[in-house]
Length: 338
Image (cartoon, rainbow, N blue to C red; front, side, top):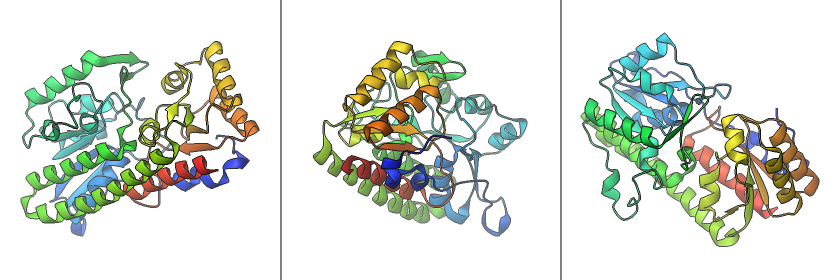
Protein backbone atom coordinates (compact mmCIF):
# COMPACT_ATOMS: atom_id res chain seq x y z
CA UNK A 1 0.00 0.00 0.00
CA UNK A 2 1.21 3.51 -0.69
CA UNK A 3 2.02 5.79 2.20
CA UNK A 4 -0.55 8.52 2.87
CA UNK A 5 0.47 12.15 2.43
CA UNK A 6 -1.12 14.36 5.08
CA UNK A 7 -1.03 17.45 2.90
CA UNK A 8 -3.32 15.91 0.32
CA UNK A 9 -6.22 14.50 2.28
CA UNK A 10 -8.59 16.06 -0.23
CA UNK A 11 -7.06 14.11 -3.09
CA UNK A 12 -6.74 10.62 -1.62
CA UNK A 13 -7.13 7.63 -3.85
CA UNK A 14 -10.38 6.73 -2.13
CA UNK A 15 -11.98 9.66 -3.89
CA UNK A 16 -11.34 8.11 -7.28
CA UNK A 17 -11.88 4.42 -6.61
CA UNK A 18 -15.11 3.81 -8.41
CA UNK A 19 -17.42 1.67 -10.50
CA UNK A 20 -16.78 -2.04 -10.98
CA UNK A 21 -18.04 -4.10 -13.86
CA UNK A 22 -18.46 -7.86 -13.84
CA UNK A 23 -20.48 -10.30 -15.88
CA UNK A 24 -23.97 -8.94 -16.36
CA UNK A 25 -26.89 -11.00 -17.72
CA UNK A 26 -29.32 -9.67 -20.24
CA UNK A 27 -32.97 -9.01 -19.36
CA UNK A 28 -34.78 -11.83 -17.55
CA UNK A 29 -31.36 -13.51 -17.04
CA UNK A 30 -31.24 -14.74 -20.63
CA UNK A 31 -28.42 -14.60 -23.15
CA UNK A 32 -30.39 -13.73 -26.28
CA UNK A 33 -29.09 -10.16 -26.42
CA UNK A 34 -25.80 -8.95 -27.81
CA UNK A 35 -22.84 -10.56 -26.04
CA UNK A 36 -20.03 -8.10 -25.31
CA UNK A 37 -16.58 -8.97 -23.96
CA UNK A 38 -14.39 -6.15 -22.66
CA UNK A 39 -10.76 -6.60 -21.69
CA UNK A 40 -11.19 -4.31 -18.66
CA UNK A 41 -14.12 -2.98 -16.68
CA UNK A 42 -13.46 0.52 -18.01
CA UNK A 43 -14.86 -0.57 -21.36
CA UNK A 44 -17.26 -3.09 -19.85
CA UNK A 45 -18.90 -0.36 -17.81
CA UNK A 46 -19.38 1.79 -20.91
CA UNK A 47 -20.88 -1.14 -22.84
CA UNK A 48 -23.29 -1.82 -19.98
CA UNK A 49 -24.35 1.81 -19.76
CA UNK A 50 -24.89 2.12 -23.51
CA UNK A 51 -26.41 -1.32 -24.08
CA UNK A 52 -28.63 -1.58 -21.03
CA UNK A 53 -30.84 -4.68 -20.86
CA UNK A 54 -30.19 -5.45 -24.52
CA UNK A 55 -26.61 -6.59 -23.91
CA UNK A 56 -24.76 -9.10 -21.76
CA UNK A 57 -21.33 -7.79 -20.75
CA UNK A 58 -18.32 -9.61 -19.34
CA UNK A 59 -15.15 -7.78 -18.31
CA UNK A 60 -12.13 -10.09 -18.24
CA UNK A 61 -10.16 -7.76 -15.94
CA UNK A 62 -12.51 -6.46 -13.26
CA UNK A 63 -10.34 -6.22 -10.17
CA UNK A 64 -7.66 -3.75 -9.17
CA UNK A 65 -5.54 -6.72 -8.09
CA UNK A 66 -5.25 -7.88 -11.72
CA UNK A 67 -2.64 -6.35 -14.03
CA UNK A 68 -3.69 -6.30 -17.71
CA UNK A 69 -0.02 -6.04 -18.74
CA UNK A 70 0.81 -9.46 -17.33
CA UNK A 71 -2.60 -11.17 -17.26
CA UNK A 72 -2.58 -14.79 -18.42
CA UNK A 73 -5.83 -15.74 -20.12
CA UNK A 74 -7.62 -18.93 -19.12
CA UNK A 75 -9.45 -21.54 -21.18
CA UNK A 76 -12.66 -20.03 -19.89
CA UNK A 77 -11.61 -16.61 -21.22
CA UNK A 78 -10.97 -18.15 -24.63
CA UNK A 79 -14.41 -19.76 -24.72
CA UNK A 80 -16.04 -16.52 -23.60
CA UNK A 81 -14.37 -14.53 -26.37
CA UNK A 82 -15.24 -17.13 -29.01
CA UNK A 83 -18.92 -16.73 -28.11
CA UNK A 84 -18.84 -12.92 -28.22
CA UNK A 85 -20.62 -10.71 -30.73
CA UNK A 86 -18.47 -7.70 -29.86
CA UNK A 87 -15.04 -7.42 -28.20
CA UNK A 88 -13.76 -4.12 -26.81
CA UNK A 89 -10.03 -3.87 -26.16
CA UNK A 90 -7.74 -1.04 -25.20
CA UNK A 91 -4.89 -2.04 -27.52
CA UNK A 92 -1.45 -0.50 -27.72
CA UNK A 93 0.08 -3.41 -25.83
CA UNK A 94 -1.91 -2.74 -22.67
CA UNK A 95 -4.11 -5.83 -22.89
CA UNK A 96 -2.19 -7.92 -25.41
CA UNK A 97 -3.56 -11.15 -23.92
CA UNK A 98 -6.73 -10.61 -25.97
CA UNK A 99 -4.94 -11.01 -29.31
CA UNK A 100 -4.52 -14.77 -28.95
CA UNK A 101 -8.10 -15.11 -27.72
CA UNK A 102 -9.39 -13.34 -30.83
CA UNK A 103 -7.83 -15.85 -33.22
CA UNK A 104 -10.64 -17.57 -35.08
CA UNK A 105 -13.28 -15.24 -33.62
CA UNK A 106 -15.94 -13.67 -35.83
CA UNK A 107 -16.68 -10.95 -33.28
CA UNK A 108 -16.61 -7.29 -34.24
CA UNK A 109 -13.71 -5.60 -32.44
CA UNK A 110 -13.27 -2.09 -31.10
CA UNK A 111 -9.70 -1.03 -30.28
CA UNK A 112 -9.74 2.13 -28.19
CA UNK A 113 -6.19 3.35 -28.90
CA UNK A 114 -7.00 3.65 -32.59
CA UNK A 115 -9.15 6.69 -31.77
CA UNK A 116 -6.34 8.58 -30.02
CA UNK A 117 -5.00 11.60 -31.91
CA UNK A 118 -1.39 10.56 -31.26
CA UNK A 119 -1.78 6.88 -32.20
CA UNK A 120 0.74 6.00 -34.95
CA UNK A 121 -0.85 6.88 -38.28
CA UNK A 122 -3.50 9.21 -36.83
CA UNK A 123 -1.66 12.47 -37.42
CA UNK A 124 -4.65 13.92 -39.31
CA UNK A 125 -7.14 13.06 -36.58
CA UNK A 126 -8.43 16.54 -35.83
CA UNK A 127 -8.48 17.69 -39.45
CA UNK A 128 -10.21 14.60 -40.77
CA UNK A 129 -12.53 13.03 -38.21
CA UNK A 130 -13.76 10.58 -40.80
CA UNK A 131 -10.35 8.94 -40.74
CA UNK A 132 -11.42 7.47 -37.40
CA UNK A 133 -14.79 6.16 -38.55
CA UNK A 134 -15.07 2.52 -37.49
CA UNK A 135 -16.15 0.21 -40.30
CA UNK A 136 -19.36 -1.72 -39.62
CA UNK A 137 -17.80 -4.86 -41.05
CA UNK A 138 -14.58 -6.20 -39.57
CA UNK A 139 -12.94 -8.80 -41.75
CA UNK A 140 -10.22 -11.12 -40.58
CA UNK A 141 -7.90 -9.53 -43.13
CA UNK A 142 -8.52 -6.03 -41.66
CA UNK A 143 -7.82 -7.26 -38.16
CA UNK A 144 -4.59 -8.90 -39.31
CA UNK A 145 -3.44 -5.72 -41.04
CA UNK A 146 -4.06 -3.69 -37.86
CA UNK A 147 -2.11 -6.22 -35.80
CA UNK A 148 0.85 -5.97 -38.19
CA UNK A 149 0.70 -2.17 -37.99
CA UNK A 150 0.98 -2.35 -34.20
CA UNK A 151 3.81 -4.87 -34.40
CA UNK A 152 5.86 -2.44 -36.47
CA UNK A 153 5.81 0.03 -33.57
CA UNK A 154 5.98 -2.47 -30.71
CA UNK A 155 8.84 -2.79 -28.28
CA UNK A 156 8.60 -5.85 -26.03
CA UNK A 157 9.14 -5.38 -22.27
CA UNK A 158 8.71 -8.49 -20.13
CA UNK A 159 5.50 -9.57 -21.83
CA UNK A 160 4.20 -6.02 -22.36
CA UNK A 161 4.21 -5.15 -26.07
CA UNK A 162 4.46 -1.40 -25.68
CA UNK A 163 4.23 0.97 -28.67
CA UNK A 164 7.35 3.06 -28.23
CA UNK A 165 6.61 6.74 -27.70
CA UNK A 166 2.85 6.21 -27.32
CA UNK A 167 0.86 6.42 -24.08
CA UNK A 168 -1.67 3.58 -24.28
CA UNK A 169 -3.68 4.74 -21.24
CA UNK A 170 -6.21 6.44 -23.51
CA UNK A 171 -9.16 6.07 -21.12
CA UNK A 172 -7.73 9.12 -19.34
CA UNK A 173 -8.31 11.17 -22.49
CA UNK A 174 -12.00 12.26 -22.58
CA UNK A 175 -11.72 13.29 -26.23
CA UNK A 176 -10.58 9.84 -27.32
CA UNK A 177 -13.24 8.21 -25.18
CA UNK A 178 -15.98 10.23 -26.85
CA UNK A 179 -15.06 8.51 -30.10
CA UNK A 180 -14.96 5.12 -28.36
CA UNK A 181 -18.44 5.69 -26.92
CA UNK A 182 -19.75 6.65 -30.36
CA UNK A 183 -18.28 3.49 -31.84
CA UNK A 184 -19.70 1.24 -29.14
CA UNK A 185 -23.16 2.63 -29.89
CA UNK A 186 -22.62 2.18 -33.64
CA UNK A 187 -21.45 -1.43 -33.27
CA UNK A 188 -24.32 -2.34 -30.95
CA UNK A 189 -26.75 -0.76 -33.41
CA UNK A 190 -25.32 -2.85 -36.24
CA UNK A 191 -25.73 -6.00 -34.15
CA UNK A 192 -29.16 -5.07 -32.77
CA UNK A 193 -30.84 -2.51 -35.07
CA UNK A 194 -33.99 -2.46 -32.94
CA UNK A 195 -32.01 -0.99 -30.07
CA UNK A 196 -30.35 1.80 -32.05
CA UNK A 197 -32.41 4.62 -30.55
CA UNK A 198 -31.70 3.44 -27.02
CA UNK A 199 -27.99 2.94 -27.72
CA UNK A 200 -27.65 6.37 -29.28
CA UNK A 201 -29.49 8.11 -26.47
CA UNK A 202 -27.37 6.45 -23.80
CA UNK A 203 -24.18 7.27 -25.70
CA UNK A 204 -25.26 10.89 -26.04
CA UNK A 205 -25.65 11.14 -22.26
CA UNK A 206 -22.12 9.83 -21.70
CA UNK A 207 -20.71 12.10 -24.40
CA UNK A 208 -22.34 15.14 -22.74
CA UNK A 209 -20.60 14.20 -19.49
CA UNK A 210 -17.25 13.75 -21.24
CA UNK A 211 -17.61 17.06 -23.04
CA UNK A 212 -18.12 18.62 -19.61
CA UNK A 213 -14.88 16.94 -18.50
CA UNK A 214 -13.13 18.40 -21.53
CA UNK A 215 -14.41 21.83 -20.53
CA UNK A 216 -13.13 21.34 -16.98
CA UNK A 217 -9.68 20.42 -18.32
CA UNK A 218 -9.72 23.47 -20.60
CA UNK A 219 -10.45 25.63 -17.57
CA UNK A 220 -7.50 24.09 -15.73
CA UNK A 221 -5.40 24.77 -18.82
CA UNK A 222 -6.36 28.44 -18.72
CA UNK A 223 -5.28 28.67 -15.08
CA UNK A 224 -2.26 26.40 -14.85
CA UNK A 225 -0.73 26.16 -18.33
CA UNK A 226 3.00 25.56 -17.99
CA UNK A 227 2.84 24.41 -14.36
CA UNK A 228 5.25 21.55 -13.72
CA UNK A 229 4.10 18.08 -12.74
CA UNK A 230 5.92 14.84 -11.90
CA UNK A 231 4.39 11.45 -12.74
CA UNK A 232 5.67 8.13 -11.47
CA UNK A 233 4.01 6.36 -14.42
CA UNK A 234 2.50 7.51 -17.75
CA UNK A 235 -1.03 6.56 -16.56
CA UNK A 236 -2.36 10.12 -15.94
CA UNK A 237 -0.36 11.72 -18.75
CA UNK A 238 -3.36 12.58 -20.93
CA UNK A 239 -5.13 14.42 -18.10
CA UNK A 240 -2.04 16.43 -17.27
CA UNK A 241 -1.47 17.28 -20.92
CA UNK A 242 -5.06 18.44 -21.40
CA UNK A 243 -4.71 20.59 -18.27
CA UNK A 244 -1.72 22.30 -19.90
CA UNK A 245 0.81 21.04 -17.36
CA UNK A 246 4.50 20.61 -18.19
CA UNK A 247 6.11 17.24 -17.51
CA UNK A 248 9.27 17.67 -15.41
CA UNK A 249 9.77 13.95 -14.73
CA UNK A 250 13.37 12.95 -15.52
CA UNK A 251 13.52 10.85 -18.67
CA UNK A 252 13.33 7.14 -17.98
CA UNK A 253 11.75 7.30 -14.51
CA UNK A 254 8.09 6.74 -15.44
CA UNK A 255 8.97 4.22 -18.13
CA UNK A 256 11.05 2.12 -15.73
CA UNK A 257 8.33 2.06 -13.09
CA UNK A 258 5.68 1.12 -15.66
CA UNK A 259 7.76 -1.74 -17.00
CA UNK A 260 8.67 -3.02 -13.54
CA UNK A 261 12.39 -2.43 -13.92
CA UNK A 262 14.71 -0.64 -11.49
CA UNK A 263 15.05 3.10 -11.89
CA UNK A 264 18.66 3.98 -12.58
CA UNK A 265 20.30 5.56 -9.49
CA UNK A 266 21.17 8.73 -11.43
CA UNK A 267 17.57 9.02 -12.64
CA UNK A 268 16.21 8.56 -9.11
CA UNK A 269 18.60 11.22 -7.82
CA UNK A 270 17.44 13.59 -10.56
CA UNK A 271 13.83 12.88 -9.60
CA UNK A 272 14.48 13.72 -5.96
CA UNK A 273 16.22 16.94 -6.97
CA UNK A 274 13.23 17.95 -9.14
CA UNK A 275 10.85 17.43 -6.22
CA UNK A 276 13.04 19.17 -3.65
CA UNK A 277 13.59 22.13 -5.99
CA UNK A 278 9.84 22.68 -6.24
CA UNK A 279 9.82 22.27 -10.02
CA UNK A 280 6.68 20.12 -9.76
CA UNK A 281 3.51 21.61 -8.29
CA UNK A 282 1.94 18.16 -8.04
CA UNK A 283 3.04 14.52 -8.13
CA UNK A 284 0.79 12.05 -9.97
CA UNK A 285 0.99 8.34 -9.14
CA UNK A 286 -0.59 4.97 -9.93
CA UNK A 287 -2.37 3.62 -6.85
CA UNK A 288 -2.15 0.04 -8.11
CA UNK A 289 1.61 -0.15 -8.54
CA UNK A 290 4.72 1.15 -6.86
CA UNK A 291 7.97 0.25 -5.25
CA UNK A 292 10.91 1.69 -3.38
CA UNK A 293 11.53 4.40 -5.99
CA UNK A 294 7.95 5.67 -6.05
CA UNK A 295 7.77 5.57 -2.26
CA UNK A 296 10.95 7.66 -2.13
CA UNK A 297 9.38 10.22 -4.48
CA UNK A 298 6.16 10.36 -2.45
CA UNK A 299 8.05 10.75 0.82
CA UNK A 300 10.10 13.57 -0.69
CA UNK A 301 6.92 15.26 -1.91
CA UNK A 302 5.38 14.94 1.55
CA UNK A 303 8.40 16.55 3.14
CA UNK A 304 8.28 19.37 0.59
CA UNK A 305 4.54 19.95 1.03
CA UNK A 306 3.78 18.98 -2.57
CA UNK A 307 0.39 17.30 -3.12
CA UNK A 308 0.27 13.75 -4.47
CA UNK A 309 -2.71 12.50 -6.48
CA UNK A 310 -3.13 8.75 -6.91
CA UNK A 311 -5.06 7.37 -9.90
CA UNK A 312 -6.34 3.85 -10.52
CA UNK A 313 -6.25 1.90 -13.78
CA UNK A 314 -9.59 0.18 -13.25
CA UNK A 315 -13.02 1.06 -11.94
CA UNK A 316 -13.74 -0.31 -8.50
CA UNK A 317 -17.20 0.15 -7.00
CA UNK A 318 -19.47 3.14 -6.85
CA UNK A 319 -20.32 4.93 -10.09
CA UNK A 320 -20.03 5.24 -13.84
CA UNK A 321 -16.98 5.85 -16.00
CA UNK A 322 -17.89 9.48 -16.65
CA UNK A 323 -18.38 10.14 -12.91
CA UNK A 324 -15.04 8.45 -12.21
CA UNK A 325 -13.36 10.66 -14.79
CA UNK A 326 -14.98 13.81 -13.38
CA UNK A 327 -13.75 12.89 -9.90
CA UNK A 328 -10.21 12.30 -11.19
CA UNK A 329 -10.19 15.76 -12.81
CA UNK A 330 -11.55 17.35 -9.64
CA UNK A 331 -8.83 15.69 -7.59
CA UNK A 332 -6.23 17.12 -9.93
CA UNK A 333 -7.85 20.55 -9.70
CA UNK A 334 -7.89 20.41 -5.89
CA UNK A 335 -4.21 19.51 -5.80
CA UNK A 336 -3.24 22.33 -8.15
CA UNK A 337 -5.24 24.81 -6.08
CA UNK A 338 -3.72 23.71 -2.77
